[in-house]
Each structure stands twice: as structure tokens, then as C-alpha cells.
Length: 516
Image 1 (tube, one colour):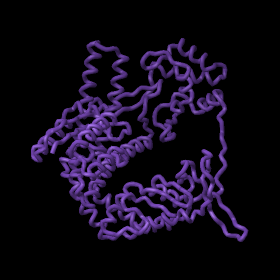
Image 2 (spheres, helix red, strand yellow):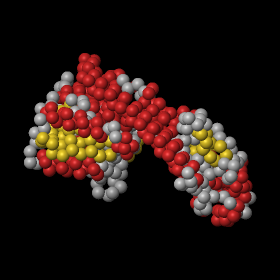
Image 3 (cartoon, rainbow, N blue to C red):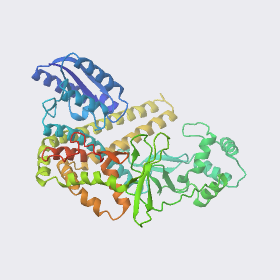
Image 4 (cartoon, rainbow, N blue to C red):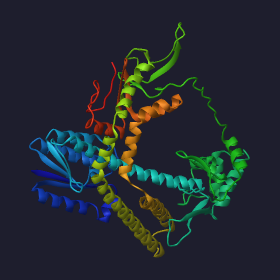
């Protein structure tokens, strides 16, 4: 059989380090010789598996389709995560369907997995879980890094770009990632004067800009400040002790204040009156409120509460018909709950034996994840050392007067920021507990209790939040509710089908549910 070999790294630093792509190529070569494959072409490239736009991989997929139209070929990766780290990647679905149709075979060298038309239900599930675990690993690292930065914010630390009027300084000459923020002795008095002049109400943004330029206020790179830059500084609460992030909100930082909070608030009054938009509170909440879209026109499904002359109360939903291409058809909320309860009952029917079986089947996959985890520690250390070397060379260039101080400051700050992120990531890799068997057992335990959790939710908002977590892309066509089950609970159902016969009216292959 002829074969195509694919090696991928996620970052340019991994590629430059030389320890990832050659290692993948060497393992694939040994595998090819063992299997007796004839090499068509070997690809290696740097591209994130999380991106929606994957140009280089798309070219390879086109080549695979071209060769597969002539004869059956083997497509070899080092591991499943080298194919993708997203279970929703359309390229994964395409190659997987080609393998099940017998057009290609997918070989994952280090993990010993082969995806072909002779796969059993358990092998299909193992491949699905390998994809899910690859995504889970990266997501878990991201969660841990976010938690580390949350702790920094609780400590009053700032991890973003330093404000004009402040400077970043290293606290430890050997570990340069330990940094602090101090007032800039060359600029702090100019920034303070800018606020003090503006609070008088006698200066516009433009006159303030001209005045401060004449006073000698410049950016860290020596450029004249623009009008928009002056406005952003006057709006920035960091100068009065409050750090603000669009993503994480506001918190009180621990660094010196350039101005008092009173001056800052008075500057805001001078700049503009804050617009306050009052929003009418919702008088009633609905279980499916904000979750459903029309299957025909993709408009929202809205709900309202009605009382019949008999005194009976109903929650009914209908398409808003915002695009004027379909009609409003009112449906009782209870109709949409029926297929949801069918799904919850399927989860409830999973036996403890099935749960134990899944954990046993995944034991071999966890071994590969441990190897991958150790490799990530090596990768982070290598990237850290490479950046330290570049920073040392930058200092040598500055001392030899090959570059200016502005260039040195800018690049040194860039390197320091990268080193800080790498140290946080390394710390999280070291202390993280990646017990995937426990994770899967926990997911199964939650799935088996899904109906109880849903029914015991004391308020409508709790039920809605649970459905939003469980259902993916729910749509309504008349009285029919369509949805797919979100990951990883869809994988739990696939396992259940190898132990249980699916109920009538439910398509086991896709977990696509509907009610007529």
C-alpha cells in the first residue's frame, strides 16, 4: 500500500527547536518500513490545529483525495492530536468518512490506532475519545493558565501592557520573569500634570496634546502622542489604582497611584457625561428562552406565557419571523421537553458495568497522554531557553551599540512577556493532574444522573443552563425539536449503544433527535 506521511507542530518555536518534526518523521519512517508501505510524499509544517483556516493542511487533504481516487492509500500521523485538537474540525470528519468507506486508512504511529472500514464499535469510540482527550488536554492547560492569572489579579497584579508613566522592572536578575511595575521617573510628573490640566475644564483633547507635547511627553518609543492616545489615557482608571480589562472586569491593583480617584472621576465628568441605558427586566423566564432557533429561517424562537379562558396556563414558543419568510406557529413548551426527557432517560439507562468498561478501554490511551504531557514540559523548557538566548544576544547588541535603547527596550519587553507566559505554563504542567480515567468516569457519572440533575434544578434558569450545556445547535421546525448532543456526552451515548439497544425513533449514528 502507498502512504502519505504528515508531521505537524503548533508553533514556530517548536519547529525551530528541531526536536519535534524530525522525531515525528523518524517514527513514521520506521513504521512505514515495518508495514511495507511505499511513500508517496512526506509533509511537515507548522500550523495550529485550533484554527478554522488551515491552508497548509487543506492542500494536503486535496492531495489525499486525489490519490484516494486512484487507489486505497494509508495516511500516517504520529498521534491523533497531530491530525486535530478539535472534534468539530470538518477535515477530521472528511478523512474519517473516507476511512470508513474504505478509500483510505488513517494510521497513528505512536498510539497504534488504525481507522479503517473494519473498525469495531469500541475502536470507533476509542478514536472519538482520543480526539476528545486531545482537545481536553489543551483546554485544561488553558484553564490552569487562566486560573494562575486570576490569582495574580486577586493579588492586585497587572499582566498586561505597562501604562505610559510606569515602567516594568525585574526583581530577580537570574529569574527575569519576576517583575514589578514602578513609576517612570522621566514621565510620571508629565502624565500627572496632564490630568491636573484637563480637570480644570479649560483644555480640549487637542490643546492638552499640544501642551503635553511641548512639555516633552513622549511614548516609550519616543513618538509624539496622538489625540486618541491622550483620550485613552484620560479614560484609563489604572492611573488612580483600578486596573480594568474588557475580558476580566476591574480590580484594585497594588502599584503606586499617579492621581487620586477624585481627580480621575472629575476628568470623566469633564470629558463626557456617562450614558446610562436602562433595560426592562424580564417578567418571566422560560426553560428554552434564548436557546432555540427556527429550523427554516434561523430566526430566534421566543416564548410567552398565556392564560386560557378556562384558567389553564401555558408557555408557548414561536419563530419571530424576522426575515419574513416563514409563518409564526405557536407550540406548547411541553412538546419540546418530550425529546429532552427521552435523551435524559437514555443517559439514565447506562449501567455501572458500561461505565467501568469505558474506563478499562481508555487505559491504553492514557499512557500515550502521559508521554505527551512529558513532551510538553520539554517543549516549554526548550522555548524558554531559546528566548533567553535571544534576549542575551539582544543585550550584547545593545552594549556594543549595534542597536538603539528604544529598540532594545521594545524587544526586551517582548521577550520578557513571552518568558512570563512560558513560566506560568510550565508551572501548570508540573502541578496538573491529568488522570483521564477519573475524568471519563466523572463525565459518565454526571451523564447517568442527568435526568435527576435536570428535575432537581429548583429554578428555570438552572434548567436552561443545564440544557445549554447538554444540547448543541437546537432548532425547531413546527412541533419538531432537532438537536445534537454536546461533547463529551455524545461520546458517552456512543459507548452506551455498544451495550444497549437504542430506543425506537432515535438515530444511533448521529444522536440527532426529533419529535413529530
